[in-house]
Amino acid sequence: MKAIAAKPERLVIGLMSGTSVDGVDAALVRIRGGGPGVQLELAHFATYPFPSAVREEIFRLFRPESSDVVTICQMNFVLGEVFADAALQLMRAAGVEPAEVDLIGSHGQTIWHEPIPVRRAGVESASTLQIGDPAVIAARTGVVTVGDFRVRDVAGGGQGAPLVPYLDYCLLRDDRLNRAVQNIGGIGNVTYLPAGCDLERIVAFDTGPGNMLIDALTSRFFGRPYDEGGAIAAEGQVLPDLLAELMAHPYLGLEPPKSTGRELFGVQFAARLHGRGDPADLVATATAFTAHAIADAYRRFLGPVDEVIVGGGGARNPTLMRMLAAALPGVRVVDHEAVGINSDAKEAIAFALLANDCILGLPTNVPGATGCRERAVLGKICL
Figure 1 (cartoon, rainbow, N blue to C red):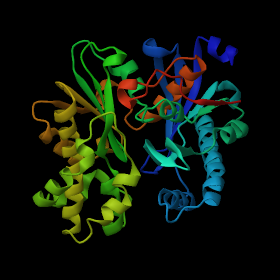
Figure 2 (figure 1 turned 180 degrees about the vertical axis):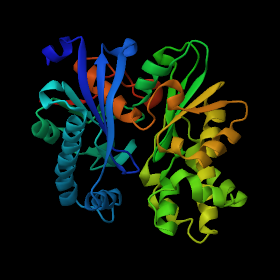
Figure 3 (figure 1 turned 45 degrees about the horizontal axis):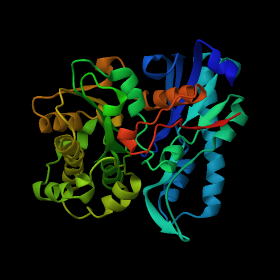
């Protein structure tokens, strides 16, 4: 471990699977140094779709009524194999040997996230669970693997999410511009970087739905996993009364720090919209809900915003991007490519950086984002 930390430059793989469960995003990153002065170079990136049987099993785990302890235990190791295979495929595609890779950082797959403490068996505790055991990845690849990044923050009283604000601060803070860095994956989350900010001034939280609700409706009514290019939403009409009802959701009014996931805005939420309108209109309204929830969060909880930098799958949805720009008049709305970052690769890059800085012993949570009581080194190291 000391030898890895002592190297001036490290080759690190970041692995990410989000709430949309599209597949494993894998980024090979050259990292020089660590912390706010870090230098990153994306060497290779690919997404490896989940086998359909694996994806189906993951969705079973999201629903308490269809999950069980045996399946969770087995899928923890199955996903470890899947993540390991993604890392090995990436190495082959990039033309590097496992011996050349210093570290792997794996987010795993979140199947339950409950950061608000509840009482069970006489003990009050928050909880979060990501599966895809990093020990399996380390065993299959022969590369030191860091995983389970959320749990230390949750143990310290934080939400365990979002974690990407650390990367946002390292790469996107600006002396003149007040920036909102908005990810639109399955869930939407924002990092607010006031002009000239230090890490203590960062605000970050989950804004609410991202693509998850749109995807659920698109799958249910059109048999497609997502609304490619926002084409379905573009054909539909936003239903004003339904949008107003959605915008009254209590999550939107909660003060940060806060985080959410599939348990709140997943298929169960989408099912309540069935029969409320024409299918294309429902997709258009869900798309507008995502855009308006983001804009509403900015007005409620952020200071002035000059520029919004959008990443995640939502950045590839022109209809959603137009709706977001319309909901934020006078604000420049761009994708990550406009500032030199691969939108698709960003979250995988973030977990490469978190693994890198874990080995260096650097704290990588952002208490202003998660609500944790202290800065903490995140991740469990598997040799």
